[in-house]
Amino acid sequence: MTAFLVLAHYVVGFLLKVFSRKSKVYYLAPARQFGMVFWSAIGTWLGASILSLIPRAQTDTMLEKGLAAGIGSALLLFSLPSLFVHFQYWRFEQESALELDAKSGVALLLRPGQRYYLDATQVRAVQETKCASNSFFWSPYKYLTLTLADGSQLTITSLLIDLEQLKALWPRAAYSVKTKFICFL
Figure 1 (cartoon, rainbow, N blue to C red):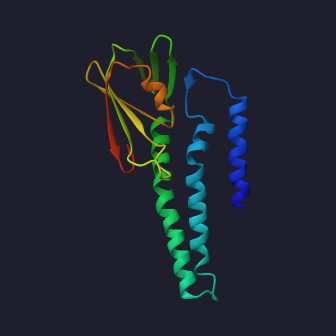
Figure 2 (figure 1 turned 180 degrees about the vertical axis):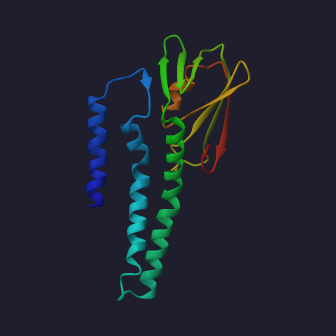
Figure 3 (figure 1 turned 45 degrees about the horizontal axis):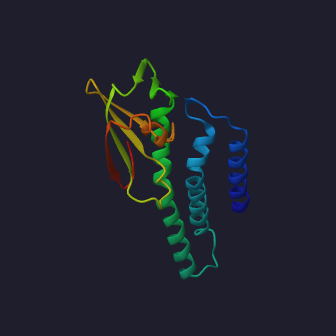
């Protein structure tokens, strides 16, 4: 069953790349969410499945139960935080849209009741917050904090757009990196 899900993940990813077109408007697209949350969901499902077998099996030895508890707990320990981060980013960006014009270096961020025109004169500093390691399920989750000319700050998450595209718009803005173990907002 798990092998089928992994195969389906790669087939869906391939089909989405073949049939997608380059867009200038970004929103919470299902394909992007699927790609980011897939391994976390599989890990959670496997961990919960393994842990649910422990009380049912009456013929298992203590060693087998201990191994099952350890493996199931480890899977949940690594997958549940990324599901929580995904849900937090989703709630934050669910009504956001971002339009990019790479030629002129301008982005238009739309949030409920707000509209931000982001060009080189508006963006003073860019701070990227990312995971210290790339080996966890939650490593793809990062965000940019933009400091604007009026002193206000905006946050844009990697669930909305690939942040490298966004950082390329403002090469002259002050750039800094902040690392966290898990990038909760």
